[in-house]
Image (cartoon, rainbow, N blue to C red; front, side, top):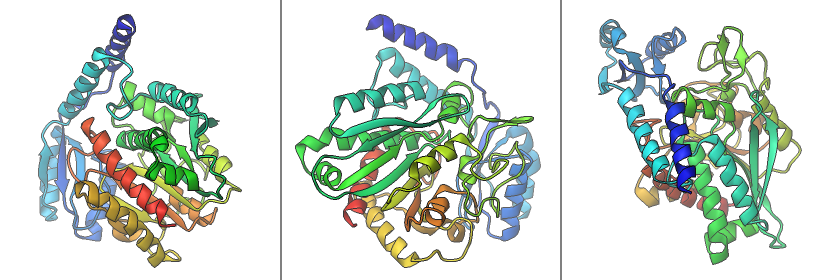
Length: 410
């Protein structure tokens, strides 16, 4: 065991020694209050002048990462537009260094650690899923629903009990954007909670006796692996696109694809791909989900504490909009009851901006799943993507409570 831990620790150090560094980058808060401000931010991002971390909201704090060399040029431009630029983090590399240091200590202390205690790599996560499926054969069934460009499995684990009752069905996916580590970790927390708590009765038994939970813990395995080995801030998948790499999977789904809020530039973080459903990951979800009688669908992102309904592609109200918000409020209220963290509910296009090609629009528009949502997990502010490992349990526990209440409402 000691030798295995030592070997893992050395491998961890060697892999992370080659990671892209962000020395000299800072995180700035700006507040866009006009349409021109939004267009200005999107233009800067399209030209790689800035990297936008959180969801853009009019009259809300938008977190942008930029090189300190560009600070002298961009800060006056933000000030002249009255966008109130404020430095949140003076050196973002310190965030990544601190995170890496924590993971290195955990790797040195012993492997494997619990899914709720540390951020697993793709390989660790895959091993854990297989262990859980083997440990709970009457409750869990693990399968690969497709392969990525780099030939990784896209795992799906189905959780349900042989209760003899008719089952409602839910499809969850996590980790569609690679750098959003709290998303796959929250998926792991839910899987762990439902399986380990079932025998004790209570909520876990109630849900698995009455529901089939179809969970894709990491929809973007290649991108997720890349954030652990090379670039912590990578967002897309890893399929080459000429001079650049990767497609934003949450702009690739084939309902109202490429109708706004995505980019045709292969180098952009929001590149929608060469055609709708062009990516292996989107096809895998499509092939698995099509033809099944889904009750509801939820996709989990980070960050910002939003519970988005469909539509993302249009500012028009989706059909049954009030029902969508009422059902979401049940889950959001339960989440808030745990740690007091509040989610804002509504259409992402109305609350923020139009973005087409999202999975929650596709599941509604093509599969006809009325209750299709996108959740943006905590936090609302800094440090954004780079949350401490203690956040896994905090976010996981409140999300589990919210999901139980949400599912019980059907």
